Length: 150
Image 1 (cartoon, rainbow, N blue to C red):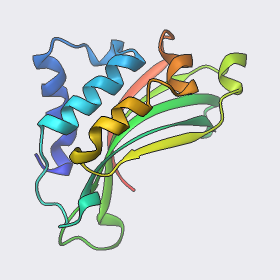
Image 2 (cartoon, one colour):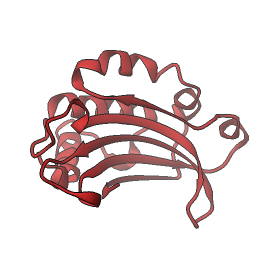
Image 3 (cartoon, rainbow, N blue to C red):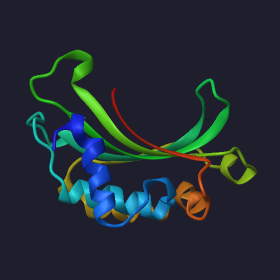
């Protein structure tokens, strides 16, 4: 897989598991994001340990479309032989939730996994987070899978 076709590869990965991308609740988003990271390698990346990293992050945002809570699992790529803005990109599975009191008490945080070798501790840290617990049973108002330059 190359970063530029990571959306297609993720959709194929989900389809082979019979998962509808529009109905993925938080626990499945995280576990499938981790499994995709572990089992689908990426090529054309820089020769550094952080060239293929995994990130879970959450916070409230208002990107001009009203305020919402985002819970996101992203795979970040650092390409080799790329310069400037073309160096870093992310494949993001983002769930958007309507503002509610229970989500407002959660402070913005993120958790990084810098390599597949570190996946076990990363995987163990997410279920204990207040954000994961808060959104685990909530259906998002919108779910997006996007690849973008950072």
